[in-house]
Structures are given as C-alpha cells and as structure tokens.
Length: 376
Image (cartoon, rainbow, N blue to C red; front, top):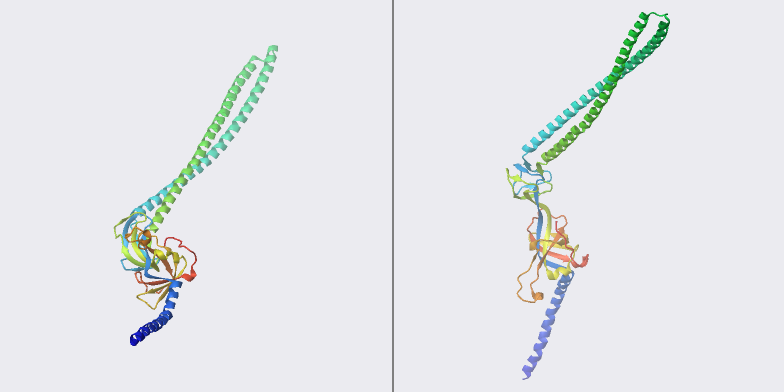
C-alpha cells in the first residue's frame, strides 16, 4: 500500500514536470507565430495574373494582311493587321475629283463674273456718254428751235406790213419743222439712253446673284474636302498598330474576315503582372484598400513580391459560396472574396498563373472598409 501511495504521488508530479517542459518550448516558439497572425492576414489562395487586352479596328473593313501569330511578343508600334483600302481609295479619288471639279467651276464662274463686270462697267460708261451727248444735242436743238420760232414771229409781223416776202416766211416754217423733228429725235435718243441704263441696272442685279452663286461652289469644295479628310483618316487607320507591349494569346479573325467598328482582331496578354488574392468573407473586415501585401511564390520561394490592395475584382466568379447545408446563415460556409493587388515592378520572368501565399500587413490600414472599384 505504501508503494501504491508513493506511485500515486509521483505520477501527478511527473505530469506537471512534463507539461511544464512541453509548455515552455510551445510558448517560446508559438508566441511569434501568434504575434505574426495578429499583425498580418495570411492568405494561401494567391495567383498572379495580367490583363487580357483586345486589339481591334476603329473602322469597319476587311482584313487584307495579318502580321501576328499566337505566342508572338509585340511592342507598341508593331503592325498588327492591315485592312483592305480599295473602297477607301475609290472614295479618296471621288472626293479629290469633286474638289477639282468644284474649284474649276468656281474659277470659271469668277472669271465669267469678272468679265461681265468689266463689260458692264464699259457699257455703263458708254451709255452715260451717249446719254450726255443726247441730252446736249437735245438742248441745242431746243434752243435753235426757240430761236427760229422767235424769228418766225418777227418775220410774220413784218410780212403783214409788207416788209418781208412770204417766201421767207415759208422758209422759216420749213426750217422750224425740220428742227422740231430733230428735237423729237434728240428726245427719243435721251429716252433710249435712259432705258439702256435701266436695263444695265437689271444686269447688275443678275451679276450680284451670280456672286451669291459662288457660295454654292465654295460649299461643294468644303464638303468634298471634309469627305476627303474622313477617307484619308480611314485609310491611315487601315494599318492597325499595337499600343501596348504583350504576348498574343488568341487570334480572333484571320485574313479576309470582315470587321465592324470595334470588333477585336487579336487578344494580347499584357506584361504588367498583378495578383489576385482570395480571402474568406470573415476576413473582409481585417483588410482595406492601400494595405501593403507581401507575396511568396511556390516557383520562386526566395523572391518576395511587394504590392498594395487596390480593391475588389468585380467578376462573376469573384464571390463563390457553397450551397447552404444548414438553415442558419451564420453557419453557412464563407464566400470567397477576390481582391486585386497592384505589384511593384516585378521580375521579368514572372508569368500569369503562378500561385503562392500572400501576407497582408494589418499595421498600415488606410480605412475600415474595402472601397470597391473595378480592377484595370
């Protein structure tokens, strides 16, 4: 009984010693682990990614040449494709011909108007001179007629006294009749000259109307130049260049394919690498935009990538929840929330698809909640 009692006392003592010796290392080695997880959010679902960029045409047309293949690396300025410009060239020829025709018509009409104006000025000067001569002649004939009338009256008085023969009176009457005819002719010439000047004024109005018609030619030239500029712009845009560097991952349309505005021809994988990290919705309150992230990749365990959270990835697959197994929503499985992490300039050998682990530092939170926005 004494040995049993001794043994019963030794067992608890040994248990205490063993627990003490086990707790010390556990505490020593576990404390940093606990502190690390208190200061950071560890995410084991991390994947490198890059944007897929479609390259298309700003105008409709048919692909005449295709200069890239799948897997080819491209740089800004590289030729992707060339569109057929047969119809555009025909439009350019048509617009150029319309400009030349309208300009020729404008020049001819301007020359015709200038000649008509010169002729009208010369005719006006001639008519004004003729009118002046006619008026002078009419005045002279009228004065002469008045003198003859006075002479006839004086001679008639003398003839009644017998001092002047009747033959002289007859001569004066004939001369008076002649001058009255001349006076009528002179007055008619004045009226004709006035009528010609009035008609010339009407022609002046016609010339003014022809000046207004010049605007029609100018408008035609302006429209044709706009059409030429648009066709030239389309022809220049028929050569499609790469705007960003990357790798061709898909050729969507080949030579001979017809394109509408905005239709993609190829799809390019951009070289800018970013990371997608997937956290449980229970961790969402622990992260915010701007928090620094350190990423370790399985392929390159010694490489530490630095970045910052920029927001949600608003895609249909970014939040996935397993079917509910219980009626209590609190007990349902957490949804996976995808976040985008913009990386600092990374190593050139990194490619999309590499996976690893991300560590989000809680010590540099910039706000309490995620500000959701689209990832570029």
